[in-house]
View 1 (tube, one colour):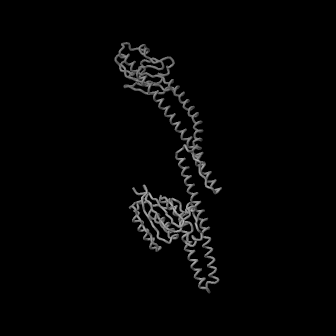
View 2: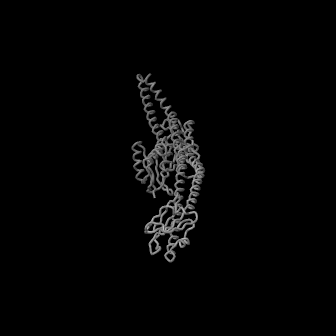
View 3: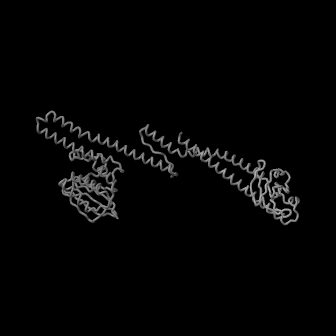
Length: 448
């Protein structure tokens, strides 16, 4: 059974049951109230009759005739169980046709005579010759039963009439609940058939759970689209950039097979070229894998980092690895909020670029700018033309392709730096002038 039909069926059945239970409760409460009210009224009348009888010297049928109710009977039952005297209203003679019974104490009860309920009250009374008898007042409740029958019919009709709008509203409710699910299912089928990611159109006014479900679905689709695009980009970038080093390796391998055994110079040249391209392919693959990560996969760990201590350790490691002098100038001791490992990787990218394109020393300066700590990497190398500055953060963009190939760059370093800066919440600024040098600035939020 479809979810729409289930919701429709269960909602209709539940509401019908609730409506029936409410009507039954109303009917029972009303009938109990009516019967209790009549019993109290009959008891009051019986007490009035007993009071009148006790105060009167006349102990006969005429006395009872003055107190007889308009829809009942008054009778005196002796201690022996005999009917001493009885007076009835016209048309209610059947009320004392049944066997009478003596009650020594007060009795209030509902009795059924000939299929009709009656209110019966029995009170002790002093009758002739000081005899204690039972005065019994019985009133017919036929009018109340007729009213209750009318009420029962009205409630049944109301229940049947209420089922119609209830059935329609349950159908509307089931469609309203399942509409986002149906839309989501249709969208997923379209995505599967067309291969294109689609979002759900969500109502702007609604903020209920169904809206949140649709919003979560759209976020998931956005994440899938991003990951898919990154995957496609990774495959495209890898196939594009790995083609050249693989071609070089293949060419030198063929050359080694033909002439490498006999010519030592060709052998050395080929081995060196193959090794160089293999190292370059390794670096390229690592950078491509990093760039293929989504923002959620960076596993950023933001902590308080003292820049002076951090930069001394980072620069010391860099100088040992590349045998290159780096001068550090700290204007003020600052502590920032960042991921130390990601920031170190970011610094390595800029210092590595400074090393590749500058023969002079590299300068690193730390200073404060409003609520930010700034790390500036300065070199005095070849610089970057103003027209190229806007594009240096694009993937695989190289200002001088021949020089970049020679120095081992593939145009991914600054693209990776851009993603790393975004991951740790840093801002990047690049200033450069040809034949003068380049300043790369990393702005990080200060720790309060």
